[in-house]
Amino acid sequence: MRDIPRDAGVVRHLRQRIGPAIDWTVDALGQPTTRVLPPERVGTIPQPIETVESVLRDGGFRWDPLSLYHYGPDGEDADGSWAYRPSQLADRQLHVVLITDGSDATEVYAHDEFNCLRHPVKHVNEIDIRRREGRAEMRRWLDARGLTYDHD
Image (cartoon, rainbow, N blue to C red; front, side, top):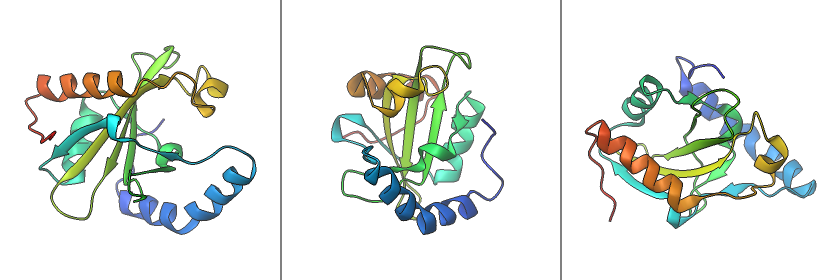
């Protein structure tokens, strides 16, 4: 997948405009939209989303526009979706969802899941999502880079 476009705001705007229609279609076909859950909460990074996205990109994560169909625990729209795979056809991937309220802080959620490129059916059907393992892996990743975050 390509890196995030220069103006991610355009993509976010499109997501917010056409997302509900796509969500309705997906729901009608039997696949619910995905809501991140409290066990996936990594924490709040006191940095604007653009800074967090830059760190993710520099760390090998790839922006994933198709996974923007996630919602926060309270129903808020996701503002960014990133995946890390050791290789394109790795068995599993670390999926990170970012949510911001427009302030200079970014909520981070993460889970470990089947790689959507190698196991698309398992991925779409949300088989064996490892929420706590993904959260722990992302916290280790942030710690290794010296990024501070609040995880209360």
